Length: 334
Image 1 (cartoon, one colour):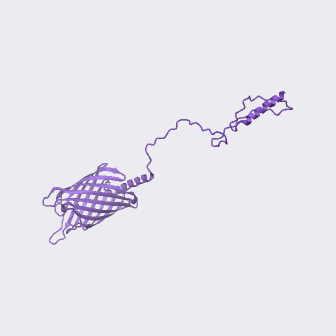
Image 2 (tube, helix red, strand yellow):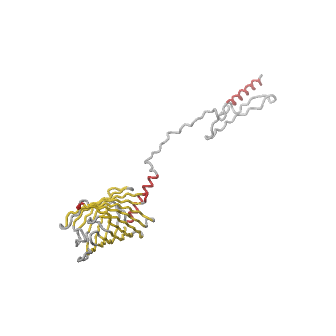
Image 3 (tube, one colour):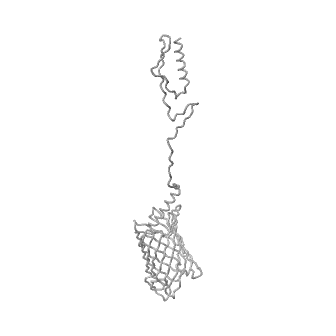
């Protein structure tokens, strides 16, 4: 009867082991050195202790019928704080293109809203709508006083030929002007530049100047057009006389300018198209229209040269009107 009891114990242990699910079989609860004392001649071989099965890798799917246990989180997950939203790529590229256009036009001296130093000389031959031709040689100096503040002075040496019988040509100093300008708003895609100019009647002859003190406030904008690689510089100026020779005509006119400047060949060249509209308020809002062009060349880091032809479309007798003119100049940027 003793061997029957031992065989029954062995059968029970074997059934318990087989009833456990695979992969989670713990070691047998009895001691490792415990063996069943069966007769060698009539019983099976001694039972060896059961070794634990190593756990499966995390990536291995559990077999069917086994519960899926999700690991508990180690702790509260920290949410990264975003200081500012990233700009869309298209908007960032547009901003870079606008900033680059402002830099290129500023470097060549063609950005009217820029605060940058220069010294330049220009010579202009003009066929006026009224009888006569003139040759003006203008010296200009721009001096930055601060990051957004610019002082500018123009002095004019002119020659005038009335081209009428019995009249002779005259030459001498023309009107001298000085102005103070400042950036009042600046962004990559929009800049506003305000300036206030004073014109002094320094001309020694009536045909070389207007004979009046003039105040000329003006506002110019920079609007880069990145799709066309072009800088757009619209502006408005109002000229009003405040004294001077009482025998000379008063001055009161508005000038609207629309300049489009495009750099070419890695900014070695540039071209400009500029239509101008002039409204003379002393002649019941009589208008004049001029169309100007320009081609310029960069010479090294500092020197720039340009040629500027222009044609007048209409406006006989309006200040600033002409049949045509041609201007050549050289500037030194500093």
